[in-house]
Image 1: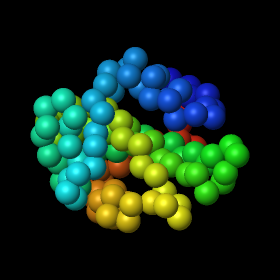
Image 2: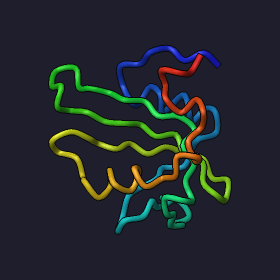
Image 3: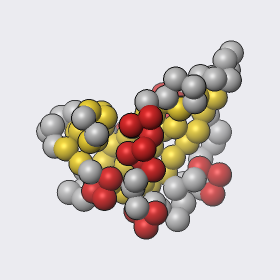
Amino acid sequence: MKREDSKHETDYIKRYQEEGYTVNYLFVNDQLIDSETKTAYKPEDIFIVAHHRYEGMSDPDDMSILYVIETKDNRKGTHLLGYGPTADLEEAEFFKDIPKQNYSNNADVSELT
């Protein structure tokens, strides 16, 4: 599916929800938690389907990454990670610890066609 550029994270979240990525993942105590089932995931349990980077329109320091995720037990959803000066460093490290082989070849939005 061709992706159009979106200025807001919520636009992509809605589009992915329509494609079945309905789980909202939260970062708690160094784990990603499924908000519905409360299942906890470690970095090696996470597969990144896509990610989209955003900068705030009025404040370039207001930055985030939307991760589109599938888990080892086939749950699908999204997680929004803030980054930049106000980022949660432990949360950012969690995503850095996801094995590179767990990233889709098309994970970077700039590669999606």
